[in-house]
Structure formats: structure tokens, C-alpha cells
Amino acid sequence: MRIFGLQQDSIVDGPGFRFACFVQGCPHGCPGCHNPDSHDPAGGQEMSVEEVARQLLKNPLTDGLTLSGGEPFAQAEDCLALAKIAHGHGLNVWSYSGWTFEYLRDQGTPEQKALLAELDVLVDGPFLLSERTLALPWRGSRNQRVVDVRRSLETGTVAVRPD
Image (cartoon, rainbow, N blue to C red; front, side):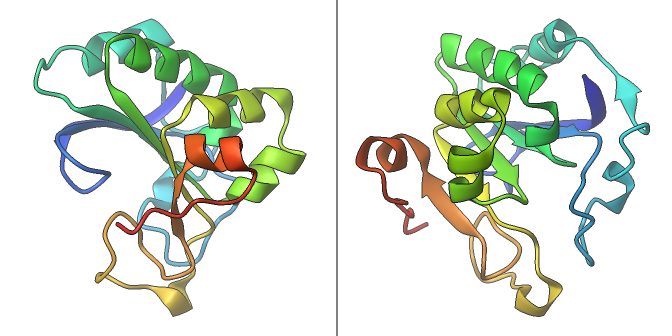
């Protein structure tokens, strides 16, 4: 998988101490993105899922995995494998995506739908510079939602978390 960066003990990419995996490559190119160097799909470095998982599992205090980017759903197969490893070790899994929950659920590739189904939480929607805010936890612009994926898939309607 192509990696932009790995961050141990992140406290800004979801609740608790998180291992943030920033994938390389993003088709959205949102103006004002906080990781513009992650957009080029040929950038970053190549790492195996197993190596990223070893890094993830190094710290016994880690509460969860956050997939960010870049665009995790552009590397859905590798991100799915990593998410399954995290869940197998009792960690929760969050992901950010410039695509919405509805788009991924209804129009995503089979790999993207499988990744979506493996998540606990999806922070969805493109970053919009005109909607930028520092007041909302876990997201950069007001249009983005913190989606309880499991509840949303069970009920068929988007369940937005209050946090």
C-alpha cells in the first residue's frame, strides 16, 4: 500500500490514542486540504499491510485505527485488510473519506463497500474551505459528518453521531 505517513498516539483523528494511517493518493484535491502532499498517487512510500499492522500493534495503549489520507477508499483493498487486523485485536476503526456514506454504500466498488462495512465510524464528505471550522470535533468543515457506520447499514438511514 502507498503511505503518506503513520502517526502513533494521535488525539485529533478520533477518540482516545489512535494510530493514524495516512494513505497516499487522493482523487478529490480539495482546496485547503491539510495534507496536499498526499494527493499524488505516485508519492509517499510503499509499505506492506503487514508492516503497517506491526506499527499499529506496537503500542498496547492504542485505542483504535484511523484511516486518513489521501483517500483511504482509493486503496480500499489494503485498507480493508488493515481494518480487519485492527478489529481482530480489539481496536475500533475510523476512516475519513471525501466521498459520502451514501455514495460509498450505493455506488462504491465491491472493495469500497467491504471497507465501509468494516468501519465503526466514517467521517464523510469533501473538505470545503468555505465551511472550514475548528469548533467541531473530528472534522475540518461543517459539511462533514461523523457517521455511525454499523447503525447506518442496519437501519438504511445515515446515523450521524453527535460528537
